[in-house]
Structure formats: C-alpha cells, structure tokens
Length: 397
Figure 1: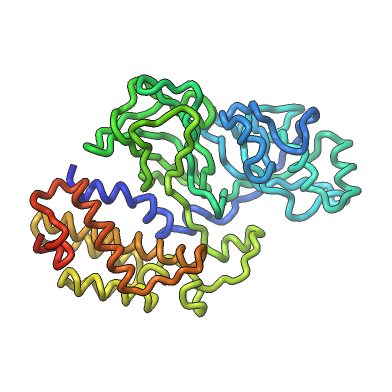
Figure 2: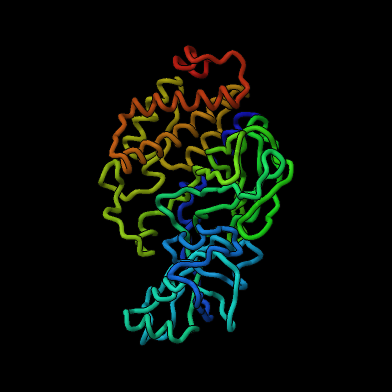
C-alpha cells in the first residue's frame, strides 16, 4: 500500500478532529417533547447489564449520568450517544437539566429515557425538588442530542471476554466522541492494510470470526444526522497478541472548541491558546498560524530544502499536499512530513498543557524527523532508507 494513502488513513482521525471541530460539535437541534423514568431498583448509577455491552463500565461512564433508550437505541447504533434532557415542570426542574449517555435499551410508560437515579435527580432545581421528581416516577421532559466529550479519554476499546485468540475477536467501544454515530467498523492488518468489515453483534459490541493476523488497526465510519460520513483510522494499534479483557486506547479524540465546551457548561479557566496566552485557541492557530508553529515549519523547510508556505489554515496544508508535482517516492515522503508536522505540533501543545513541558521549536523538528522516519521506513516500502541520509535531507534519501 502506498505510504501517501497509508499515512492519510493513520492521521485522518487527527485531521478529522482538528479541522472540523464545529462539525463534530454542531449547535443543538430543537428540543423534542417526551417522558422519562428512572431505574427504580438501582443505586444512584446506571445498570451493569445494559444492552450496549458496556458491563460495569456502563454504570459509571459520564460519572453515572446515564440512561436506557427506547427508539433512540436504534439497534445499538445509538449506544454512546449523548443527550441533554430536562424536565418541563418549572416548579421542580432546572433550566439546564442533565446530559446523559445511552448505555442500555428500555422503555416504560411511553418514555424515551429510563435514567439512573443520579441523572434523574440532576434535573431538579433543589434538594426538595429531587424528592418530588423521584416520587412522581415518570415526568414530562424535552431532549436534544449534544456532543459527547471526555477531556481525559480517547475512544477506547475493550476486548470482550467471549474472545478466543486467534479465532474469534469481540470488543466494545468506549468513550464515543462528538455528535456522530459509529455506523461501521473495519479491522485491518497494519502490514498490508487488508481490511475486514466487522459485525455489530449488539449495542457497541463488534465481532468477527477469523480476525486478520498481526498487529491490527481500526477503521471507523462516523455518520452525522445530515448524512455526512467519514472513515477515520485511530493512530494506535491493537497488538498482535491481543487478549480477552485487555483495554486499548485508540489515540482518537475529537477536539471541541473551547467556546463550545463553555457553552455546554464545561468550566474552563482560560479560553485562550495555552501556547501564546493571547489569542483564542483553534486548530488553525495552534497548528499553522501561530509563531511557534511557523518556527517549527521553518525548521522542517530547512531540513527538507523545500518551501512549505505560505500556509495559514489546516485546510491550506491539505490543499498544498495535493499540489506537489514530484515523483511517487518524494510525494510519499512529503505527505508523511506534512502530516507528521501537524501531529507533532499537536503533541507539543499537549505537553505544555498537561505536563507543563514546553518544547523548543527545534526539538519539535527533531521529533518530526524521528516520527516520520519510522512511518516511512515501516510503512512506505522505500528501499535503502537509512537514518544518516534521512536526517540530512529526506528527499535525497
């Protein structure tokens, strides 16, 4: 498989998440009138035996603000989707309501949601009102779909206990991000990118007999309510010797804009870019147009002896790749360098935010050299590639 396509698949999850943040967290639609109940025999949290296949995780995801859905379950496609739900009795109910995650299937008395007690009480405007809501059992509500956001978690998979290496593989998807459905999943051999479409067994559980061999990567089809569809491939892989019960971080996270998070009630200390502490943070600023990003790109330009600019947006970067008129080998390398630069800039941003570790631009350039070298060497099938010539000038390798 040509590297240009392979690398595009590998980092498409990253590009998808940063170039269209508003697309994955679109404005809420109109509220729909319905009814909601709660699990009467449960503790505060949700069910550990829900039809989405989450097990005990289904009771604690989203801090226990979870619900079973009837029509919204949609044969399992609705698992992991998030909804803002608020009761409509102004005497008892708050204006904000509660954001719940679908973890189960069920209905009662014409309801669209059967909520955990914790989530049901959250709709109340006071402790006294909580008691009133619980005593009613079923209340009138209105709801709308909203983006799921887990700031500390990427989309994650857990290998189901029913799996039998190497003959049968089943896994469940955790921490679904954004406001799109995962409507299909493929499992691919990383060596040659031969892919196999998986079966949705139930809920968020995907299965296959005779899974591909070797280390594996996922392809997930994200589908929006507007009919828009995108295949993305998370960066991290499933190791060759996968085992039942193992949990794997896919490395895929949908970036929501700070202002979008603030509007949804996620309190942020600062809405400005953590790198410059001056401008509002968005993907174009952090990855392309900020002076730090430009310094990194200048270092990459000197290393490659090429001109990457003028670039001001992530879309400019993607458009620039398509305009290169070079031989097949160089096109592979240039594509990998572009994507590696974007990825490394995002990683350096996270180093600063989460580890308080500021990386100088020349250090990031060195990281790009190493990361892209491994991509090209392991996936590009380019003969006679060695580090000495690569570090001097990759296009002469």
